[in-house]
Length: 114
Image 1 (cartoon, rainbow, N blue to C red):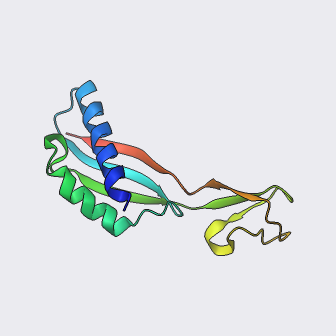
Image 2: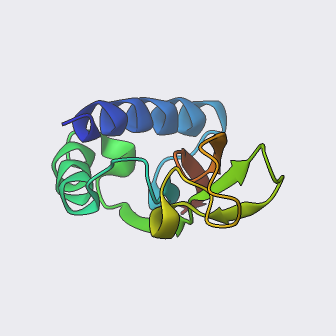
């Protein structure tokens, strides 16, 4: 249920940016969402559609979500692999000495304005 908190933070950040840049209307926001970020995209979009109507600068803004593939690094063999497919154990050397390189983030990629 952290989607609502992320949307609130996103709306606040976008309003601040609009104020700083003298923007009256944001038309589209493109977010990159990590594959293992645990953000439920359907619920995230529903939250966006609810909250954008309460922020005049965002009222008609569309939300586009792009997925950032999750990639894990193995410290033992120094190789990377797709996280979702193989999990925490390295498919090459079967080590558990792994850590996530990317795929857990949520980043504003682009803002389209009027």
